[in-house]
Image (cartoon, rainbow, N blue to C red; front, side, top):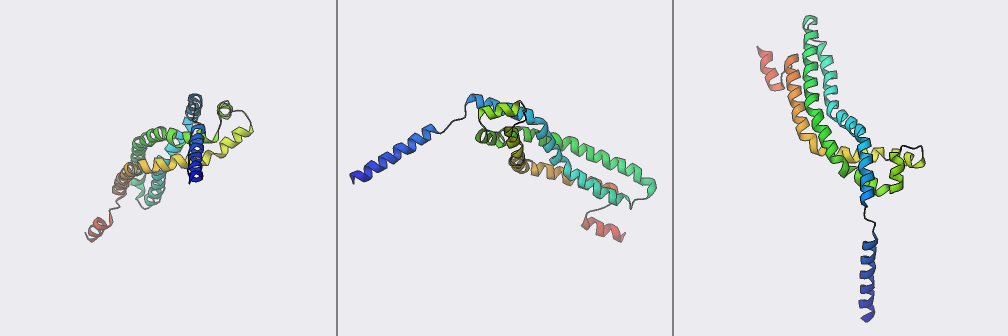
Length: 189
C-alpha cells in the first residue's frame, strides 16, 4: 500500500515536472511568427482572392457557353453586363474573404510555425536565405494553406454562397434563363 502511494506520488510529481518543463512560446518567438505571417500576407491575400473568385470564374465560363445561344447583336452588351456583375461580386466577396483570412491566419498558421520552427529557424526564414530551413518551410506550405483554408471555408462559406446565388440569379436573368419552375411557365407562353 505504501509502495502504491509512493508510486502514485512519484508519477504525479513526474507529470507535474514534465508539464512545467514543456516549452512555452517565448515573446521573441511569437514576434518572429508574427513577422513571418506579415511577410506571408501577399500569399494569404492571393489564396483568399482565389477562393473568393473561383466560383465567379466558373460562372463566367458557363455564361460564355450560354452567350453562344444569344443573338449576335445582343451578345456583346450582355457579356459586358455579366462581366460587370462578376466584378461587383468580386469587389464585395474578395474583401470579405481577405479580411477573414488575415484574421484567421495567426490562429491557423501561427501554431504550425511555433510548433515546427525554433526562433533561430524563424530568423532564417525571415531572412529568406537559401537553406535547408527554407526548404522545410516551403514544404509546410500545403499544411498552412489547408489549415487556413479549412477555417476560412467554414467561416465565409454561407455569406459567399449567398452572394454567389444572387450572382447566379442576376446572370440567369440577363441570359434569359429562368429557374426551373418559372422556366416551365415561361415556356407555355
